[in-house]
Image (tube, rainbow over all chains, first blue to last red; front, top):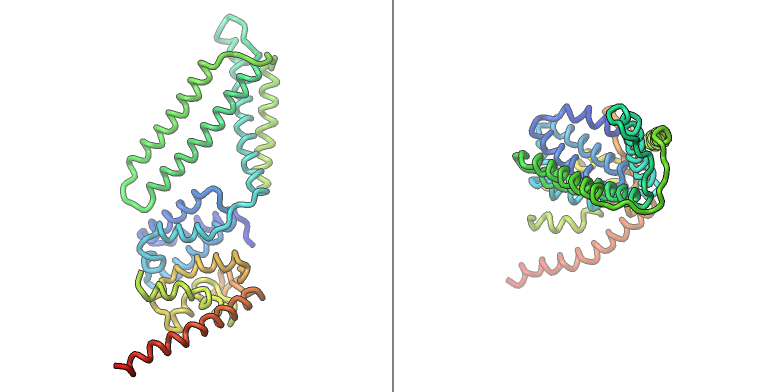
Length: 223
Length: 111
């Protein structure tokens, strides 16, 4: 069976052969199905490819997407989604681990770099320690906010499909991002220091960040 | 939904399995064959949710291979479980089709 990345690539190429009307119909359906993050990626891409092949063959006989898949693309996509199996856990885990690793990696690298260049701009000594419990709470808050924002944004995009005019969605997505950021900043600012104090020098932060980043890249590649 | 498509919905699994039993096909050909035997107003797309469901139940398996025209297509094969299911569907169909047909035929005689 063809692997997922190859299927996605072929899909991108074949989609260009669609007429404008069919492309709109199909692309909305494609986005809507791909946004269902808990479904098996491989199975989703396979059925999307079958639908595209069918549409292309129909198109060459002068049929439209509406004639082939019906007048209600959302209802049709929902029927497909209902039958698609969920992603296996063993495939989902490296994906999530990769995301978490990537995020932690950047987190540590940025912290390290800031600590390294801060002395260039200020006279007083830089604080290279942090408080364990406070740090754990802040990092968890960031993760929860990110996951939550992604889900809301997926929902917003999903709702915007299959209709004309999408100008409001950009504003909504921006708002979700701004609110999330505000919560993270507020928590960071108001949370008191507690838990054991740990000395974590700048260079160590950069090195550990780099390790997290490389491991997450590796997990992503292996997928 | 029209009356006809409602009636068809329940028996669609059987129709699809019967076509695949005769020879492995991919989606587009399957929809063509269904139309050829006279099921003309089945919206072509309806076969895909059916194919996914039958696959999930293990009645058919899909395999990517080159089509007659050249490019790769996903061909569906009937499994032994699929064959059993098809026989069951046909049996059930016979159980309801003949009494209902008798019932409907009777109308003309009474009138």
